[in-house]
Structure formats: C-alpha cells, structure tokens
Image (cartoon, rainbow, N blue to C red; front, top):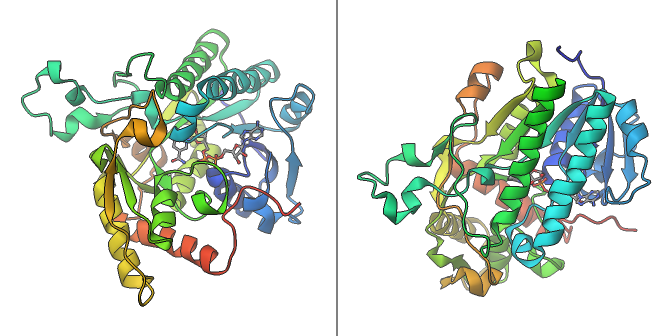
Length: 369
Ligand SMILES: NC(=O)c1ccc[n+]([C@@H]2O[C@H](COP(=O)([O-])OP(=O)(O)OC[C@H]3O[C@@H](n4cnc5c(N)ncnc54)[C@H](O)[C@@H]3O)[C@@H](O)[C@H]2O)c1
C-alpha cells in the first residue's frame, strides 16, 4: 500500500549537517516540520518560522515523547547517529547503541504506528572493494567496476572484529536488514538513504575551535588556517566521491515527495560518481585553493605530512579503500542528477568555512545557551 503525501514531518537529528539543509528545503516546500536534536545552532536562522518547531531532546532518554511525535507526523526522517570515524574507534559501544539500538527503537515506533520512515544509513555498509584483497588476484584492480556499488546487488566486505571501526558500518547494515524484514513480514513502508561523502556549509566545527574530531574536510581547513601540516592518514591513498549538500538534499527531497510511491521499500545511493578523488588529491586541491584565495602575506602554506591510521585515530582503525556510487536507481525513479563538480563544491565549502572563521562565527552544533 502506498502512503499518501506527507504534510507533517518529524526530522530526528535535524539540527545536524544534513538535517539543517534538509529542514530548510522542507520549509521552502511548505511542509510542517518538527526537529528533534540535542542542538539547534545550525538551524537557528529558521527558528521563528511558524512551520518549524524545534524540540531539544536526547533520543536515548525513555520519556521524550517519541510515541506522540511519531503519531503527530505523516513521515519520520531519522538522521541521528554518530557519524565520524574518530568516534567509531574511540567509543564503539556508544556508536552501536545510538546507531543501532536507539534507531531501532525509532523504527519500531514507526512500524507500530504505521508511519513511513526515511532512514539515513551510510555508503560504509559496502565496506572495502574486492580489489583491496590481494588474494582476489584481479587482473584489472583499477577498473572502476570493482569499486562501484549498487544498492540491491553489491556484496559487503568488512574487516576483522578487532578492527572496530567497522562497528559503524555493521550497526547501520543490521538496521537496514531489520527494516527490510519489517517490510517483508509486515508491509512496513521505509526508504533507506546511503550517503556518499556529502560536504558543504555547516559540515563541522574546526578542531581548534571546539572539542571533538571533525571529518577530514574540516580537519584540512583547520590545518590550512593555522598553517599546520595536512595530515594524510596512511598516505591519503583512499578514494572518495564527494557530493555537494545541495545535490544531496535535492535527491532526499524527491525521496520525501515519493512520486507514485516509487521510493517505497527502496534503498538509494546518493552520491556524485564523477567526483572521485584520493584524500591526497583533496588535500592538494584545498591547499591550492587556500594559496590562491586566502593565504595572508607572510603566512606559511601548510605542508603535507603522512601519518599512520593507528597514530591518528588509535588502535582498531581500518578504512574503505574506494567507493563509487551507482546512481542508476535515483536517476531512473527520481530523475535526479548531481550537478556540482568537485573543484566547485570544495571551493564553495571552503568559502563558507573561511567566512565563518573570519567573522568569528563558530560552525558549531551548540546554541549560545
Ligand atoms: N555526511 C555524510 O556524508 C554522511 C555519510 C554517510 C552517512 N551519513 C549519515 O547521515 C546522517 C546525518 O549525518 P550528518 O552528516 O548530518 O551528521 P551530524 O552529526 O551533523 O548530524 C547528526 C545529528 O544527530 C544529533 N544527535 C546525535 N545524538 C543525538 C541524541 N542522542 N539525541 C538527539 N539528537 C542526537 C546530533 O546532535 C546531530 O545534529 C547520519 O545518520 C549519518 O550516519 C552521513
């Protein structure tokens, strides 16, 4: 059965990087939105909009009113997660509890109340490529076909249990499998999104301005601003396909709209297959943009320094070597095509972060209070 068009949307984790952009887009589309998050710093500019309600709750608490809010909504979008490799290594149990146990609790409330759920998963479910396994003995390991992942047919290859970084991938994968099972046995209506490295304004704070470990783009920005080395974990050989947040939100918005029920019980890769770059190339690109646009007279340009994964993140670190999204499904069912090219999206993201830095505006999760 197809769920009717949603009007009231509950966005859990809507105060985060993706959630803040999505909330803006939903408000522009005329939806009534309730955001639940620990922080509202990234959506503070929309607070006051009569169609937006922000509720500060920790979804791990047992009495925050989830049942009532799910009942109020026509659609639930769940973005809550620890979404940062530094944390997968440092606090793997907490990552499992939040990203699986707590998210399952949300999903089961949606099942019980018969509400459609859009669940943010991750491209990390695919793990490593077959080309990363020497014993596979591929004749053409560089062929992109070995690194191109499709939602409904690719195999998942994860590392050993003592490489606890994979707990993030595993927790998300298990949640996906449970949603699939609820769909199969009880007709539960969900859509799953696997983001491929979104970047853009509001992605993260700078490491020197707040405690914690931001993602690689913000690490590099921080290093460039403070003339510190750009640390390349394991030489920065791993490759990613960077996707601009504007493109990503447009695709997500079409999944929300769900034309003709096309997204019912579907998994979608969202990513830009043309934007593949190694982390070393990303560092070099950012270094060059910084030199051209922001380097002050007399300021030293950051050098590149190679560090080991264990040195940088701690024991238990391992990484996906390469991942390219197959976006045939989003193209076909949603008519979606990513527009932003790598150089432009990196520059736009840097411009935003520089502007925040120069205006002493923290790209922060927290409110002033
Ligand atoms: N950004 C990407 O490229 C990317 C890649 C793969 C997967 N994802 C997934 O997309 C989702 C959103 O990612 P993001 O980049 O916006 O991350 P984010 O960290 O910016 O957003 C997550 C939000 O969840 C909130 N949150 C965390 N714990 C909470 C709790 N206990 N109670 C209430 N709120 C809580 C955080 O405050 C934050 O605002 C996540 O599920 C993530 O795993 C993102």
